[in-house]
Image (cartoon, rainbow, N blue to C red; front, top):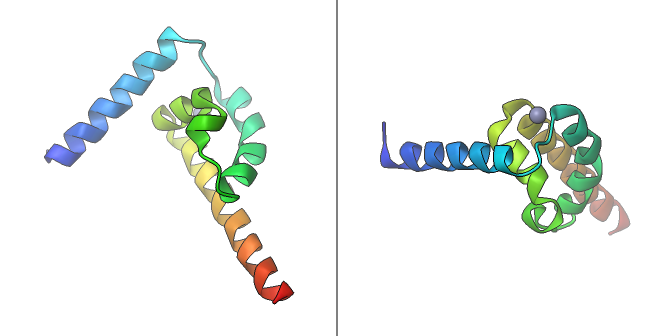
Length: 87
Ligand SMILES: [Zn+2]
């Protein structure tokens, strides 16, 4: 296991522990926020500043993280398409 992977694993374990200490977020609650958050992140906002609980959930939940990344990708593509259209 590389140092990078160890560091990644450490962060994941840390966020799982943090998520269990603080209020826990389940996938249903998380995905309810994803669309709105993805819109803001695609617009340049930082997820950590918006909702740290969601960020913590995404760090330990691959399903939601994947969904979130997909949403941001789609929105960014839409935005760049829109900009080109205006130009
Ligand atoms: Zn989840």
